Amino acid sequence: MAKFEGTLPEFIDFIGPMTRNIVCDLSRSFKKNTTCRHDGCNKRKPLEAAHLKGKERPKIIGDILSLYEVDSNIFEVDLIEFKKLFIEAHTPIENIILPMCKQHHLEYDRKENIATEYPILLDEFDNEDGQDTYTQQELDNLKNSEVINIEKAIKESSINKIKEVVINKYKVEKKQITFSKISDSNGLWNFDVNKNKFNNIFCFIFFTQSNKTYKVAVINANTLPIEQFPEKNKNTIRFFVDKQYKDRTGFQFELNNIEYCV
Image (cartoon, rainbow, N blue to C red):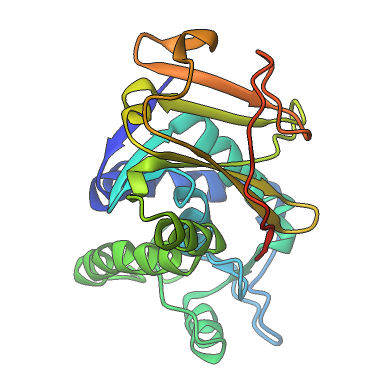
C-alpha cells in the first residue's frame, strides 16, 4: 500500500499536481470541441476547469483528508484510497466543473464567493494569441494559498466537526480516535489502527451515510484483546464491523446510547 505520513503542506506539495492532472484527464472528453460555457463567450483556448459552487477542489480534498488526520495537522493517508475517493467525488465530471476562459472563471468565482485556486488548464497555458495567461508570480501565489484553502475546508468538514464533538465529550486527543463510513465495497465499517493506541482510551466512530448519523464505541486503556484481530502489518490491526456493530472476529462493540445527527 502506498502511504503518506506528514503535514498538510507536505501532502499538498505531493498531491496538488496529481489532483489537477486527474481533473484534466476526467475532463478530456468533456472539453472536446467546446468553448467557454459563459453565455456569449466563444473562446476555445485556453479553457480552465471551473469547479462549481460547493464542489471546489480544496473542499473535496479537505473532506477526504479529514478522514486521515491522526493528530493536529498530521495525516496518515492511503494514497490509493485517496485517489479513488477523489475520482468518485468528480464523477460525473460534468456535474462538478464547467470549462471556462480565465476571465469568466474568475468572474464566476467572485460572484459565487469562491476562493481562487491554482488553475487547471484544459489546454496549454498560452492563449490564442500565444501569450501566457498567468505569470509565474500569479501561479506561485495561488499555489501558496492552496494550503490555506484546504486547511479551511478540513476545519469546516462535517467529519472534523464530529471528531471535535467526540474529543470534547470523551476528553481524548485526536490521535485517539478512528473514523469510518460504511464501505461501498463490503458494506462494513473498516478500520486500521496502530496497536499502541490501545494503551490509552480509544474511540471508534461509526458513521452511517444514509441518514448522516454516527455512534461511538469507547475502548478503555489496555482492555482490547489485540491478539484476536487480524494484522495488516506488525504494527496495525484491522477491524471489519457489521451493522450490528460486531467485528468479523466476533468481538461485539459496546456503544454509547446517544446517536448524533450531523
